[in-house]
Image (cartoon, rainbow, N blue to C red):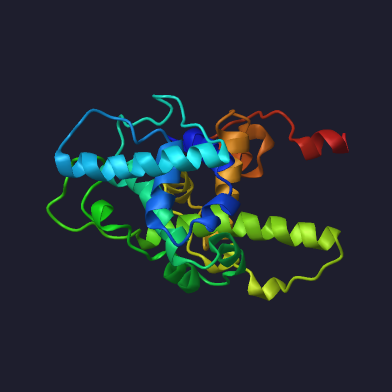
Length: 256
């Protein structure tokens, strides 16, 4: 839901700025929550307000130093979000990643296995965010770190695309990069979501994330826009349902 908002935060806060403050959890949280526009809200309690005021003071200083501006109110949305997806704690978790890692972007690009990635991403945020999803709402039990499914999703949607891009750039520059040191979608389990489930129900069972990504691509390119007759899978299904006459596929048109 907040993909666009998080992208705006990333554009304002490049890794170079965050890495300069990686030894200070307070500065990292102030930068991320401040640019996200999440340091402004009504008074809650002396304890919460004291912690938030420290972050606001830190952000005021850093925003002048780096010419940063918070997102407009309402850019980050909270409606219909599960507590685990609340942006406050997600940004605090990212701050913890930068604090615990020597060079987070570099380590993500160098990781070669899911086990290594899980070890890299298994961190706990600061004390306040171990018991809060957002300002003032304290939980009874200590909150955990991210789960295995989230690590797999980050591998598929972040690490592998970044590594692929880096490989292409180095190839263009004539630099070598050991392909066996990179993560592969072939080695990751297939994704489990509503789109993949539709294909599974039709007898297409993906063996790895490589296959499930292909199914997601097919769905976005052919199923959603209802271009079934241009897709080999779609044509097979339509014919099995008794569709007598179908428009020619792209390949058939070229043959004619």
